[in-house]
Image 1 (tube, rainbow, N blue to C red):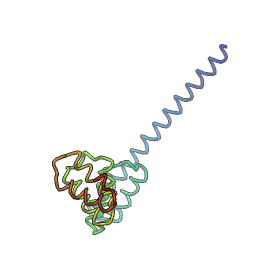
Image 2: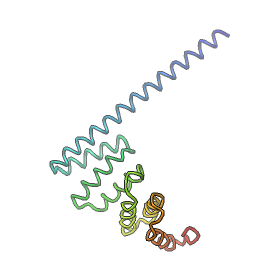
Image 3: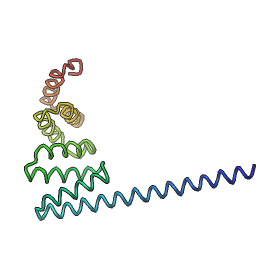
Image 4: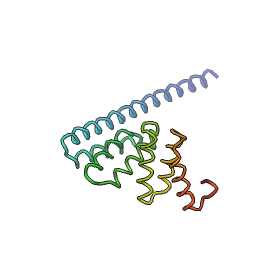
Length: 156
């Protein structure tokens, strides 16, 4: 019986060590993502767009939930005339941190996504805008139009 207890407690210790090791790896990865994003910001300040894009994309590859990297990448794409890519990055950023933007920004992004033929993403933006500010009547109208066009009258 004491043998079972020893084995069990040793196993728990190994599990704790493994968890702590995993946490260290995650912290290192998050720091690395932040470092890439910071480097991207330096390149963006110098208008070295390809290098800035590469750094932000590396940051996102390391940490796909890094909303700030998506926002900064969206700005660079917008400055370089890559509007569709900018829109996608804004969408990712606002999906990760919906309360970061004002309701009107969600509406603007929803309008842009709708014009790009991405109704499901537009719906997400409009619903977030309504959640943040329920009295945006034009958003209810736009949302109804999209849902109607998709044959989802019961959701409209």
